[in-house]
Image (cartoon, rainbow, N blue to C red; front, side, top):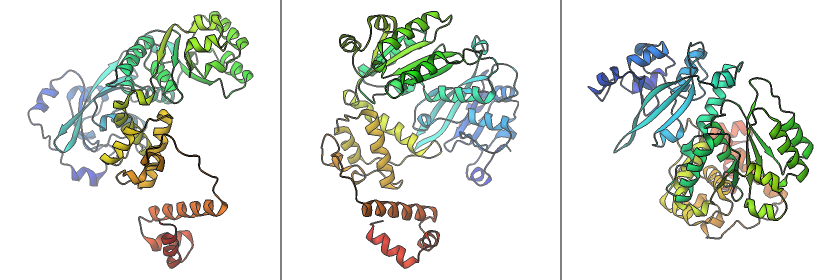
Length: 446
């Protein structure tokens, strides 16, 4: 019966709690499926069976999880296509483009819509609809691509969806509208914003939700790479069928030399089907132009659709949503992140976040480690957040003894976690007597 987990399947009765609604969905022309809150397949309609070639009896009870390792490739891909994303598990409806199982005739992609079902106790299930994506020009754009590469591109496209831009902030609503406009064509786009506001993420959303998503996305770090490497990446990129550039994102583009800017313009104009150029910069285009970092020709050629990304302190209403998303990604799609205490949320809300998303991500990851998977309390946050300081103070270099203590503490924590808290097993794994382990735990405050 599919790729099931018998014990878990027994824990959840296959009885449909929604009665007569099942007959309505059976008559629906679109493929429909229902997942339990544990992502177990509970119901499929006749259209779903016709599309997949699998019967309800074969698939009922199967777990729809990302990156499944067991079972035939076709079945794994099918169950992965039905796996809800962390955003869906967090309660948001979402449409995701997924690769259809290999070996099928017809279009290789599905648009899968997930609708979370809620009761007073929280998430109870997920209703799903499948819409087959017609090939249109996509097949011609990427001939010869392997099923694995197609699946990877579709998974990446699902990760970089417009849902990441949804916000109550007027500034971010403007960004989403501009991103949708940019995605609809190959218009050169100019993204400006402070460091770590998400410029590259926005560039990837525009690409993977845009008209050139079946082609290659290339990100070039103009600050970190030598000019000859940039020339090799850009001008030496293979133009063979199936490997054509769709979007070039230039990170810190103001670091490009004026000579290289001129070469880029000449190269761009020579292309029969030029890629979309997305320029990323920490300062406004006008300031960079006045300071001489950009040539007038580069500015006029590639600053066609400007988008300004606001800093995190300009959109405080986004903080809870962003924190939830970062926590989901930190713990992995298979796990649920810990609860955040109200006092912790308040401390996060008060902070001005000069380091933007990078700082928020680092703080949450450190808090997860400090909490060991339990509820995130204020004590798990860095000291500078608890004391209300604007930024973290520069930490003095630790001594060798302090470093060794940190290593020892981390090793003890890992051994205890692997032994599920059994101190005797942890001591045996570390190769020390149990009494010594207890003394070191007390000294190191484990």
